Length: 180
Image (cartoon, rainbow, N blue to C red; front, side, top):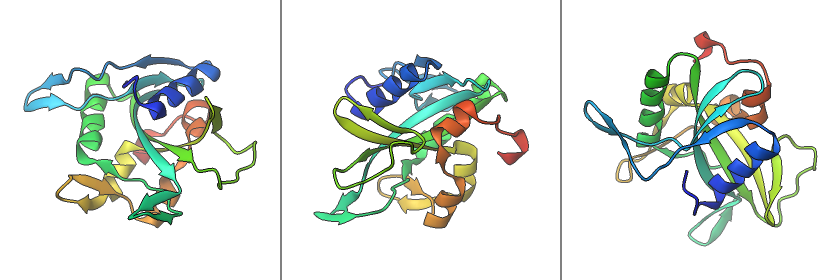
């Protein structure tokens, strides 16, 4: 966990408010692996439903901006290292653990959501929305976004099909192994 990253701090605040057990991972060191090092994850979270989640927090803004223009797009890109790292951590932790990309959207002032929207979170004067995708499912459908920056993304329809409120993974039914 990067204590200077407001997205990760907001996520930790959410976990504390929900009284979920978690471990914030020290990102200052990479774990050794046979072929180099493994990209650190941000949190290990133990859900109320018994889930064991290996979490990489992806901070995004909604609406996004590009070239000074506002885009009302739910960005879901990631670095390939993040996806590979979660897969390697899952092997190390075991089959009972699930890699999870948590897209933490900082909401712009014009965005209106109902207060009862799942995982809508007010924290330290900012508003966030937490959405998550299982890393194994993401990997199956991801496509290259930028070879230069080594980033990947999902097609809009694929993201809509896979994304769930974070609460689904921490309080809902346990993920089924054959869905991964």
